[in-house]
Image 1 (cartoon, rainbow, N blue to C red):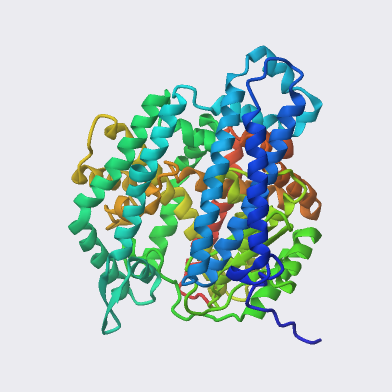
Image 2 (cartoon, rainbow, N blue to C red; image 1 turned 90 degrees about the horizontal axis):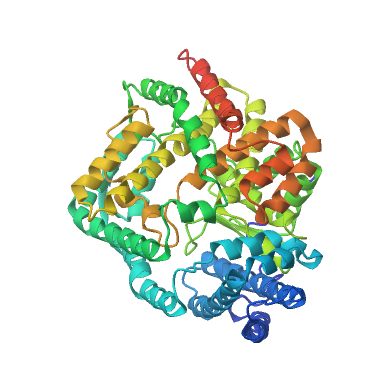
Length: 602
């Protein structure tokens, strides 16, 4: 049989021919402008409904909003791909600015609609929203109405928006620029190198311990030197956010993140409760790995260390076949989709200069396609990254038939399909592993993800929660931030991590994202949720694929709680649900401990 050769460069011409000089893309932008003008005319004539016969007007507006959103998504995804494949594409940078203006224009019109809905009398609204024509939009319209801020006048909202652009968001940009400007001097195998922060952090997985250690201490020294400046940035971001919440009547700093993720607080609390009760198995894993490295406990700079210095290379074609074969064990529709992605060149995987360092999946809703971006270096970790992004692409595929207004799903659900795809590969790879050593390498990669979600992400949540409590009373000093971070890490890791970075609050960019606070708990939610779904899939076999697709399709039009009740028949406000996914992770620890019970790993 002739061996299949897969293209490493994606095909963007099927989307818009000509890349950043595409005439087709300029026509698309002109079409977008016309759609936005039409939307503006509709919005300007849309006043607070005074009667129940306004269904047609409301339906026209929501359909127009959905249409514009799809066209904007198509444009944004295209530019994201252009800039990722060539970070020096200045024409693409210019196009990004043009699309950003259209996005801002669109969001202002949507805000006007939300305000009108919020002003509608309750009795009229109850009749309107039950109209058959609005059935598909009922959830999101109710969400808009309930979550629209009515405490601020239009003038105050515009003022805050201006202050955010020039002040609040600027602090976030300043943080990114500051970190990007830092050089780190590190000795790497006898040679002193000037590295970026990202490059220095990447040395945490270097096979030589002395390199990992020196990189860790070099970074800690820089954070100590600049801690006062970073403390000011963090305090200003949090202070502004708290003032806006106070003006808007927001009572808790967790209120908005939970709404954005369509989660109840009791769901989040049930999840964290289970995580807290199952710290010991993962501490055991860390202790055993440390023991294998000749230490009594896991040093922070050794966490990402490979358990075996010999790295087995895997070619791209081999990786593609491996993914297709393993995915086929789950279901025929997922298998056919993954084959299409490889055969039709939806993946940019070439290892070359001037590419972005960040892997992603971009959805193109107008053409019903996706594009996956990464740099394939020939490792099993690269295989996992590739299948992770293909999982996101399959989620986009599942949403093809969904209207534009309901295609967007919250971050709490966003990592579900990607993590689920990883679990399929892990499960299949473990079954086919030919030696103890191969099994250990795979298990180690799985367990690193569990530790990150159950320990590291938990420490971020605890730190941010306690920081905001203290920031509400005034400025929090850098020394106090260090103490809060140390306490959170100790608690979340159950005391099993030695020499952790008390400056994690400095180099973790999520704390400085101005779009949303608590950019942490959704990761753990998505991870455990996917594991619970995977447990269900293992019970039902290939027949589960249909249920899985239906779950993904509904992910943009209901709360997380309702989604799981409808498709899995389970209550995620209960700890019992979260224990099912956790049980799979604990089983991984037990297998790891068993395999390392002797020095013979062959």
